[in-house]
Image (cartoon, rainbow, N blue to C red):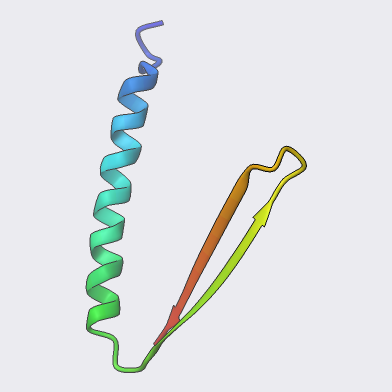
Length: 59
């Protein structure tokens, strides 16, 4: 049982990894030579839970 990290540890590691990735991605976009194109999609499921997806394309 000691080899398996607690769920809060996993959550913290994922959050730190995402924050690092987000900062890298932000710097890449700020220094991109071209323009940034955004696409957005909004939908809901059968239970009426809403979802939104945003995709950015850049060179």
